Image (tube, rainbow, N blue to C red; front, top):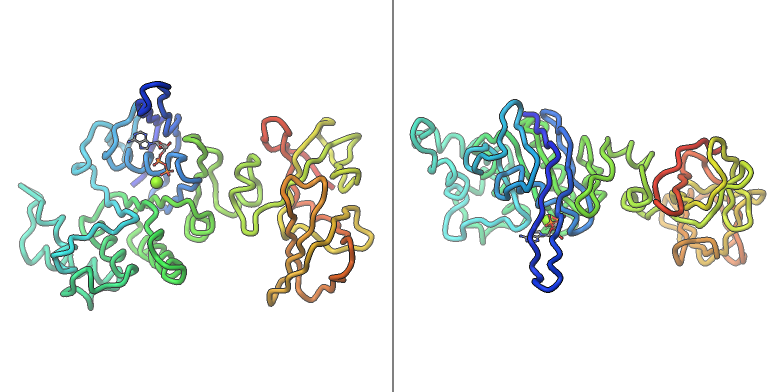
Length: 367
Ligand code: ADP
Ligand code: MG
């Protein structure tokens, strides 16, 4: 089921009577989520991810705009009638019910022509439990399950209704690191098997990048960029997106374009074609540095951390916008740890230029 969001906006009235400042939680969100895809809604806390999800589910009313599921205008439809499955961060299972009773609960509320027979309810419950691989645990109470298992029950409970759309709001946040990895792979598998259009909200870029067909990066209620995870990583639209994706994060320098050359500090590091002379932010991905004694960029060496396959060179520079610069290189490459400085050349496809004032990307050729 395709989900169309047309200029969706949510304004919350002020909580603070004095300032009277209303909150624009979601600002003109305009995007079509393709049928059968898993879309990651990504951004820092407070950027409007949950509000967007709740408007899709019907739990929050829109201030303006429209939402369609396929051809259906669902903007005014109540949550029960939208056919969405919703999974939250805290699993919110009923503690006094068994796993089976928890999963079948939504089906028992079906009325009229949708009413299901006892056998049908039990069959669908078993199928949903199998899909999330908890069919062995159906007679347990939630307190007898691990966090990961509880979250699977919550997912089964959302799936048992055969929803048109599956909405997941930070579903992995309460799990420990290992379970988080495992459960996110599970969600990917379940989504592939069921082909239900799924929207997955997270503030964790790695999580979103690893399982999404597409990511939508948000900041202060506004979409910053939409695309396949690798495309967004390889071509960020602005400095915010560049900084939000990638671990270790992108390194940012104060630089300038002058006479067809890109300068970091006093050093001309690359040639630039198709951009006016101006001050810029220079973003360099950690993997964009090549240790090169004849390279144009000189950084002050702080430390070299060897971590198996890779080595991480930590350095400083007056031109850096951050206290330290982190470059990732192959651990076979020898770096003199006692040297005061280290020289680099840069991989041009790992270097992005941004306007110093608006922080928007400058699309130009670097050579
Ligand atoms: P996220 O899920 O990305 O962390 P939210 O969608 O929860 O962000 O919130 C977006 C913004 O809207 C925040 O500034 C938040 O404080 C505000 N907000 C969320 N819900 C309400 C509400 N019920 N009343 C007033 N402001 C709200
Ligand atoms: Mg949230």
